[in-house]
Image: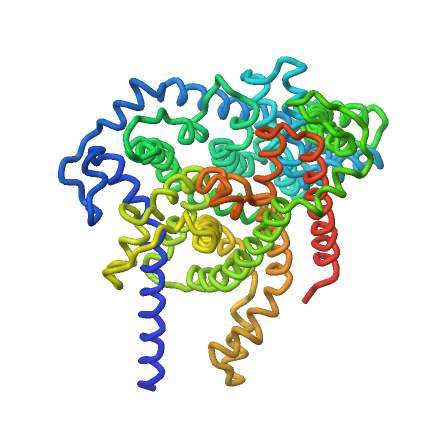
Length: 281
Length: 291
C-alpha cells in the first residue's frame, strides 16, 4: 500500500527532525561555552554573538593556570575523587556481600537503615555536620571530604552490587569451599571476578557523581578547592561586568571536556548503571 | 554455608564501615538538626535557649519563607509537567529505530553527566539580554526582542525552571526508556492487527504499561526538585529579591549566611518530613500500582 509507506516515511522523517532538534538543543549551548572560552574578553561583548571566533585565543586558559590555581584544583579533585571511589568501592563490596549472603534480623534492619538514610537531603544535615566536622578537625581536610564523598556514593553502590550479587548463585562459592577455598579466598578468587562488570559500571557512574559533587566541597572545605566549586570562585576583574565570563566559560569547558570524552567512551556502562539504579531503586 | 554464628560476626564486620560512615554523616546530624530546631540558636548574637515550637510557629508568619515555599511549589509543578510531557516524548524518540539513534543516546547523557553549577553559571550568561545565547536565538525569529530574564520575578523563575528541564529531562527520558524496553513488541503487533493506530496504542498500551514506572519516577524526581539547591545558588542567588530562593537554598542561607541556626533547623525538619511523606507514598505506590 503506497499511502502506508508514505506515512511511514513521514514518521521516520519527523523522528529524524525531532532527534536533530534534541541534539541541537543539547550540543549548541556546549559549543557556545567553548567558543566563549576561546574568544578574547573584549570580543566577547559583541553583538550579535559570533559562534565562530574571529581571533581565537587560549588566554583564559592560561590565566586560569597562572592566576587561579587550576592545576592544584585538578590535583585536589583527582586525589579526592580517586580515593573516594577506591575506598568507597571496597567498603561497598564488603557491605553488599554481607547483605547478599547472610540473613539475620539485625542485618535486615541495617539494610533498611542504609536505604532510609538516602532520604535525608544534604541541606537538612548541612549545619550540624559542618559544626561536627569542625569539632573533630576534619573541616577542610582531605580526610573529611573523602569520607563525605564516600558517604554520598555508598547507598547507591551497595544497592546495585547487592542486586547483582543476589543473581550470582551461592552454590558457586560453596563448590569453591568444597574444593578447599577458605572464606576470603572464595570471596577474592571466585565472587569478585564475577562481580567485575557491575564494579566497572558502578565505578563509572560514581566517577561522574563524585566529579559533580558540589554541595560537599562548597560547605565543608575552604582552602581545598575542587573543580566543581572552582567555577563559582573565580577571581573578579574590575570591569563593568561583575562576572568574568571568559574565565567562567573556560573553567566550564575544562570541566565539560573530560565528561564529554568519558560519556562517549562509556556510554553503554553509564546507561546500564543509571537504569539499574533508576528502575530498581 | 553462611548460616552459622561464626559467619554472622564476619557479616557485621563487613557491614560496619559502611554503617559507621552513614551514621556519622546522616543520622547523627539529622538528630542534631531536630534538637536545635527547638532552640533559638543565633550564632551572631550567641543566643542558645530552648524555645519549644517557636521556630516552627515563626515559619508561618515569615514572608520570605512563604515566597520560598510558593516558588518551590511552582518549581516542582512546572518542572514535573515539563518532565512528563517532554521526557516521555524524548523517551519515545530514543526508543525509535533510526540511524544515529546510538549517537543521540550518547548526546542525551551529556546534561546528566555535567555538574549543575557549570550549567547554571553558563545560564546566567546565556539569559543576559545583550550578550546571551537565549535572546540571540529568539532574535532569529523576532529581531527586536529585548528582555533581561534574570531581573524580573516571573522571567527569572521561568529561566530557572527551563535550566532545570534542560539538565534533567534527558535523564528522566533515559529512565522511561528503560521501562519502554521492557514492553514486548508483540503487544503492539497484536494491537495493530486489531486496528489500533499509533496514537491509540500509545494512550491505550504504552502509557498504562508505563504507569507504574512513571509514577515512581515522578515521585523521585519531585523529591530531587524539592531539595534543588545548586541551580539557584549559581544562577540567581535566589533573586531578584527572594523570588527564586528555593526552600533548600533558604535553609542554607539561614544556616550559613544569616547564622540563624535554630530557625534554619526548623525549616530543614519540615523539608525532611515532606521527603519522608513522599517516600512513604512512593513505597506504597510501588507495592500497589501494578499491571
